[in-house]
Amino acid sequence: MRGSVAIIGGGVGGLALAGGLHRSGWTVSVFERAGGLPTVGTGLGIWPSALRALDELGLGTVARERGLVQPDGAMRRPDGSVIATLDVARIRRRHGEGVRLLSRPALLGLLAEALPAGTVRFGEAVTDPPALTESYDVVVGADGIRSATRAAMFGDRFPLRYSGVTAWRGTVAMDVPAGGETWGRGRKFGLTPQAPGVTNWYAAVAAPEGFRPREGDVAVLRRWFGDWHDPVPAVLERVEAAGLLHHDVHMLPALPSYVRGRVVLLGDAAHAMTPDLGQGACQALIDAVALVNALVACSDVASALARYDAQRRRPTQRMAAMAARASRLAQVRHFVGVRDAALRVALSFGPPA
Image (cartoon, rainbow, N blue to C red; front, side, top):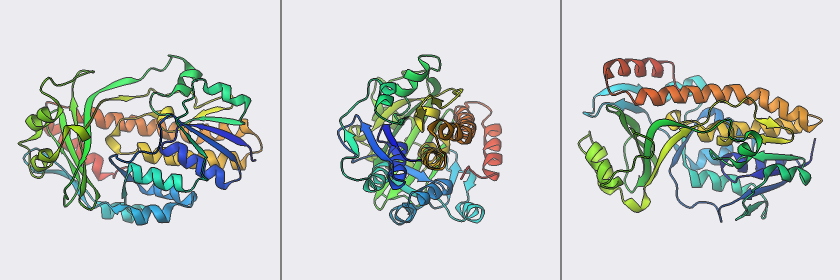
């Protein structure tokens, strides 16, 4: 089957879908409200399953070349003692390769390179997604956690839920020997290499929704994490308010379907999850490939969207539930010994790849 598709949102999932459908002979239009691709952004871990999705889009080799190989990491306590280790070699043995680290701008740039000029219509917000079905065979809501497409499909029946965590993230100009996370009481701090001379960092704290520190973001981060083990203090010394992002972490309850008529959701619009497993971008890539394959293989749109929904809704909702459990574990303030034991057990089974 070939046809026309309107994709609302030019993020990871939207651009991946656009590239896959363009390669398959579809007429593609991407509506992106931003004025252009971002030039700054934090790092993403591209796990083996997502790398295989990029292979199906013809972009896997380039992604591997541009990405850093993730080194081994560790879960630590604030004093630096190890709770558990992330054995990247074990991931390679189980899945044939490890994890590549790419910044969000680098991944979006790679996906955009596969599209003809003019495919992405920057600066165009869509206020009535279902109305596009008058002009296109399929309308795809890839418009993120606060999806207007999802709202048009379900109204206010499935509001976002606050996870209990507020988070900060950014990059600093320094190298770290390895990534990893440090878990305190209701707080954690993470580091990943992003590029030579650039480190991605993030901090998550259990707090009431809407929490904003009176003393300012940088000051409160240094107060909360400044006496943790190296290199956390050195990273915080390089953090500047201008390059720092702070937001409450929300998640989406399980939807009864990702499809309504000829309108379909993918990525965060369908299954926004907490970032604890690092799977948001990965699942969006896998969604995109599954939807491409369904639209190409089936003889009509209804069958294709039903196939996509059957293939992706339950796996992504299971992943979201796993991420939510990991988020709750990170919020533990008491019985941290029990928490640490649970972490070791979880990592012994290996992260989703």
